[in-house]
Image 1 (cartoon, rainbow, N blue to C red):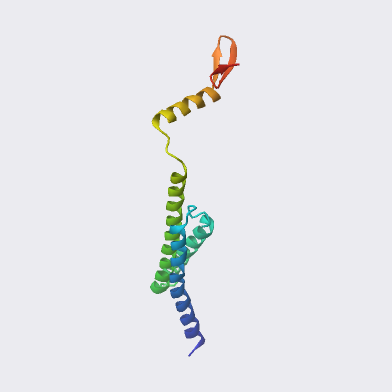
Image 2 (cartoon, rainbow, N blue to C red):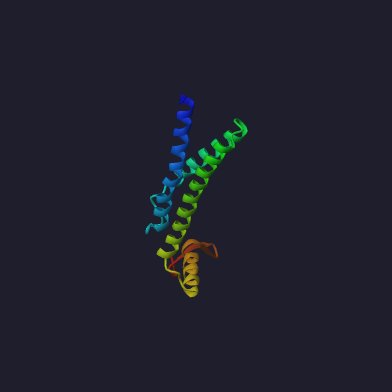
Length: 134
């Protein structure tokens, strides 16, 4: 067996195994109780871009469809991890905040307006805070 054949076999085997290595990460993100907070969007985003650029390189520079397909599959798995983590993060944020009633939201908005806007009365500026004038 030549050295080229050995390195090709190792590359193919490692990338095949790597496709299955994504499964526990996707599962962990999907079942995390804290909104997949341990998933690094930056890291997985860089992995996604690296796999996409390698796939493009394989197509454009090498005309190697198998290599491109291999890295496209890796890119899809990175995208799946990012999508699941984002979905879990949003659902965790929604679940951790109770949904206020419409009347509470209106009251809260009015309180915010009172706290942050200045009211001009004649030539005197007064801040309205908590319903009292100062």
